[in-house]
Length: 428
Ligand SMILES: Nc1ncnc2c1ncn2[C@@H]1O[C@H](COP(=O)(O)OP(=O)(O)OP(=O)(O)O)[C@@H](O)[C@H]1O
Ligand SMILES: C[C@@](O)(CCO)CC(=O)[O-]
Ligand SMILES: [Mg+2]
Image (tube, rainbow, N blue to C red; front, side):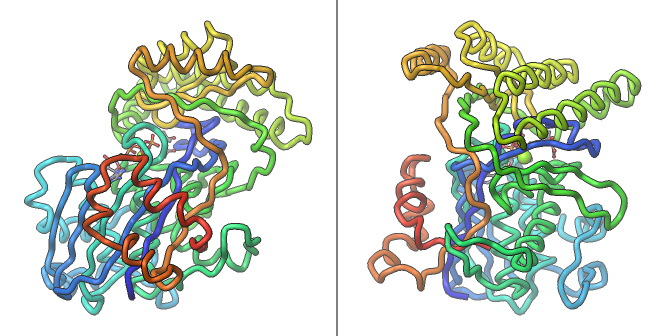
């Protein structure tokens, strides 16, 4: 396949993080901050090159170093397409571990393991070596779905290279019909396997939003082959948000594990809180689904949800500082978003807030060392940019692997591959 980009959005969870892992419903929306993956055929067709500059990772493997013959017995198919499984296949993980011995940092180990697990299932020894480079305008490890957007980009690109899906045909404003969902559902399912490599026990909401975009009410269904339920939410554009990054690094895997430990230690208390979150999300969905958005009721539910997350033990002093500033300035209602433990908060803004009040609050937050984002909700899901859709000189500048890998920051990434050529992107 000639060179191409795929891209997928990050997300904010408006309600229901952590309880989503226990099969309760949650509401999330795609962001305009996105991950971008450039895939180019390698002149050395027997070599796979991974460049993840955002985490200072560069890794190479020979296509033949992947133990294709030993893997074959463990890779399942369904109607000739690779089939996902409820859990990562331990034998595959074991066979791939020999290729990870020089990944010294856990950050690099997890990212390479995710890539190799998807590559070994979705590609084959007959797929020539390619270069892969991921850049993101999302803060990494900040609760905005950076792992999911990475997993969706890898799942989409490797599914296309493996010949399991075709390039998308829809432009940004086209209406997507249900029959078109087959390929995006395939990407969604395989990106969940990627998320399992990143954090062990994902609910699937992050990768579902990164795949399909928009805003969804999502509920994980347990039990083999039980499809999760995803309901699109239309009435979210009225929601105005302030996103604030505490810049405190943390790991979703560790936070999800800490809630599981509390659940084992105090099952009645923990399950009562998770049930309360279930009811809260249902109430929030009903409010968001009515034509007139009862914003004050939604603000109350934001505060209740944050209080329950504090009780689950997943807040952090930095998040509480952000909430204190936002509440003192009466901006609206603030809660942590994503796994917590640091990372980001969202503030649902009151509808009569003035620009001056908002700018003063942003200034105070930034003076305290936090980072605020203005972002739109409900962005497009996973998309592809084909070299053939660009003019010759655009192709020259936009598909230079070295320049893409060397882009210095979020603004330059956005300028180079984001806003500038939006109309040429196609979506599954
Ligand atoms: N641009 C990127 N390049 C390479 N790896 C990335 C990139 N973005 C995310 N990752 C991978 O995802 C991991 C962060 O995932 P994690 O789930 O902990 O945080 P998050 O997805 O940002 O937050 P949340 O899961 O709460 O939404 C990183 O450690 C890295 O392995
Ligand atoms: C904490 C969590 O609920 C959301 C992480 O963004 C984990 C998950 O649902 O996979
Ligand atoms: Mg994540």
